Image 1 (cartoon, rainbow, N blue to C red):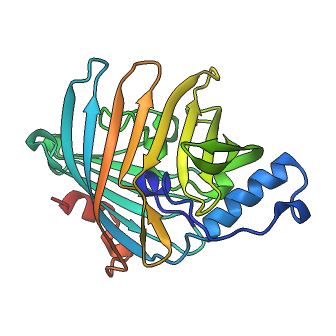
Image 2: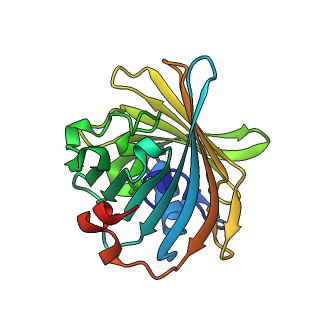
Length: 264
């Protein structure tokens, strides 16, 4: 089970995989096999905490910075849970997003807006919208469960000096803002290095690049930087990750609407 939203976009990890020639003949079978094996290799982290800096850049390169925290919880038999809280700037301090990811059915998401003293449920049809003005959509922030997509292996390719599998995944959610996503996964550790997102008109919308990976607990790879660039608006959002902690003792009581409202 992959980690949620922002973590989930970076949690494709594994050790050596067996040859696919004996277990997957068609491009669809091979693409699915890569996704399944990568997902299995990220099981067992239980819960995590991490600090983030979000840097928003407009087309002219002007920057706006935000500080935030992310807590995540693995859930047996379902998608992961996450709670994201903003600490700065003052005008959005305490703003938070609670996500219950699911393997098949629509994810549940709630946005806490302290300035309005309101918790807003994010409707499924609105999850392709931007998260607090960033280039990440709400649907990007839920865990990317294998069951949410159809897959197709495209090719092997070198990317910035690293050997990668290139697969395509097709969202099954009718409300997704994407028709397809092209994903580059390195063949040594099975880390997600790059994703191209295509909009509902099948035009290239965004590209996500993850780098500066560090391995934790001798198994789990996490990036130091994720950059989402919007090709249509020329805006970008960068996430800088720091101070990862795992198995901190979080449980389901830390991921409720009450905990979302109490978080500061």
